[in-house]
Each structure stands twice: as structure tokens, then as C-alpha cells.
Length: 496
Image (cartoon, rainbow, N blue to C red; front, side):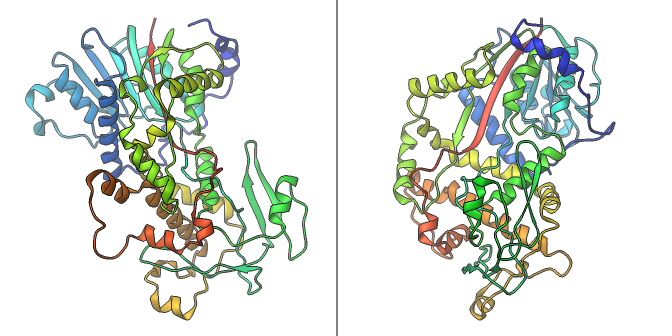
């Protein structure tokens, strides 16, 4: 074990409870769909194009025994078997979704094995069996208290001087910092404000009556969930930072996704998943590996929305100003500095030396789409968390004008007699999806790069949604803080 400041806390960490889950339980809030598989393939192409290799580490010769943990549909394992023709590749996953051997070339299938099992249990392999182990984006499946045991198991199955490669990302919920606060709609007819809207097939606009809720508003912070109450029309004591802004509540902002963001955080907390695995991995990796190399985190800014035409034009124009892809994954010895300080210095050095962080926007739309698709795969788990957070609050009754009733095609938003809170969740969800589709801006990029004209026909739902917003609320604020839609980092670890 390397002698770093981290070793001082090893004994304390190892004395903590080992596991919160039940024996044999699988941690998977994500439903693995074909859309996610497609983005896995895009990720594979993006990383291999940047590295000009299947791996971050530059091998002198092909490793003879390879293990791909969490192999999914097996794309990387198949590519490795094709490229390294003398290697045996084992793909390990909880699901049996990999292609059958009879659909692969015989020269590949005879050196390729699929093994099913739970990564959180003891691996079904011998000590020192593999030269190289790879694990990519498993943060949604490994509880924080089990990272040390998972990495210790990987070290066990590695040969002396074997190599582990980990590519991981923080579990971000992409959205711009809110400009309005979460106020629970009231089901009564008294109103302190109304919100009007237009509706498309997937465009949510409602006219809803609001007042300060008689129920509790639950908010999560870094330590615990707190309970704040507003009663009737009188002012009730709130934390000083929120008191002034909540004294005169406004209808929920369709661009305010804080309820879903809190539900995402609640979901992660329920499974004991770290929202920032990139911050804890250097410590956990140092417990099992003698030497670690990494690169500065690749942070992709959240694209701006289409209403900010001037900034969006600038965003599209920088497509030609690309960073040198090869520099993004340049490995260096992991510093013994505290990780936050080391990462900050590394990011600052990379950004000033290689141009501008803005040039990463040339990839932002695909990275955002990939993050969004992952979160969509967790929708039901997020709903369960949303219900736990807001289940005791009064749920909204959707009130429509005569014109809205005649023009609306959004029938799914009719109040449910069984669970109206689900209708409220779906309204929040579609507002967020439309916002993200607008920020992805695929049409704008096709017009910019391919000179395509706008298609004839009905505008997309996200554009109807964007056009329905008040003009002053639709535009991005010039002093908005930078938000990220993705933060990605690779680690190459060497067993002594």
C-alpha cells in the first residue's frame, strides 16, 4: 500500500460497517434500455477516439487475460478480442444480454467468455487470474461503503503487477440553478398567483391556483432532510436565507427542476450511492493499489437554452475550435494532495494551456443527451423518491380554461383519482425533458454543421414548451454560474 496521507484514515474506514444491503441484493436503480446501449456505444467511440486505443494505459504488448466488469452488451469485450488476437477476454455482468457465440466470428468467440454474477459479491475467479481488469461507469451500482471491498476483490483476481482501469463519472442531475423556489400548490380555490400556459402533445402548461401550503415542505441538505412549514397567509419562521424569498411565493417556474433534482439525490441516498464518486475514488483506490495514474476530470458545461440566441450562436460557432483530444486523457501520477485541491490545479492548468473550457461545448449536446438518457432509465426509482419526499404535501388540481380544454392534446395530465401526485411528478418530468431537449439543440447543430434548413411541419414539443415561457424567464441570465452536465475521469491502477 502506498504511503500517502490517505493511509492515516485506513483503519477508521475499515472499521465502519461493511455493507448496508441485504446479502445477494443487486443495486440497480437503472433500467437498461436499447437507448442506453446506443449511448454506451457512443461513449466507447468518444473515448477510443480520444485515446487512439481501447485503453487509457499504453500497453507494451496485449494483456493475455482480460476481465471486463459490468460489460453490458459486450461491445468493448468483443472489440478487445478482435484487436488482441492472442488474448482471452471475460465479460462479467449481472444480466445475460451479450450476443451468443454463434453470431460472432469463430476466431473471436473461442477467446471470449460471458459470466453472470453480482459485482458486489465475491468474484467467481481465481487469485491472480487476470493481467488487466476494466470497469466503466459503475457508480450507479456500487454503494459508497462497498467500493473498498469491490476494489479489494479486483486486486485479488489481478496478477502481481496487473492493471486495473476505472472510468467513472459523477452522478449529476443536469439543470440550471433555479431562479425561483419550490412552492407546493394548494388544492383550494384561494390563489396568490396563477400561471398560464400553452400545450402541445408533450408540452406541459397548466393554469393552477397556488397559495402557501398548509403542509410541510421537505427539503434535503447535506446533512439531513429538514421540515419547514408555511401556514395560511401568515408568515412562519424559516431559515434566514430563504425567509425573504418565500414570504411572497410565486407559481412554480417550469424551468425550476429542483423537486426532481432533490428526488434524484434522495434516490442516490436510498441506495447509498455517492453522488460524486470522482471525489472518493482516489482514496478507495489507494487502499488496494500501490500506484495510481489519472488525468484532470473532463467537465462538460451544460449547454444554454435556445432562447438565448446570441450566446447559442457563439456556442455553435466554437465547433471549429476543438481541444486536442489526445490531451484530455493524458495520465499523470495521482497527487498526494487533497483531491479537491489537486483536481482544481489540474483543471486550471489544462484549461489555460489548451485553450478554453468553452470549446468542450462542441461535444456538450451528446454528453448531455447521454446523461439525460441515463436519468430517464432511472425514472421509476426517482418517482419512488419523489413520492417519499412530497407524498404528505397537498397535490395540485389542474385547472384548465375552456380554450385549453379544446386545444390540449396532453390527456395524461388529467388529475388521477388514485394518485394525483404522480400527475404532478409527470408535469415536472416533462418540463425537465423539454428543457434538456432544447439545450441539446440537435436541430441547431445540424443547421450549423450541415447547413440543413428547418424541417417543414409541426414544431417539436420542446420548442412549443420554450415558446410558452414568459420571455423574461426564458432567457439565460448573463451572470448564471457554470453548471455541468457531465464530469468524467479515468484511473489506471497498478498492483504491486
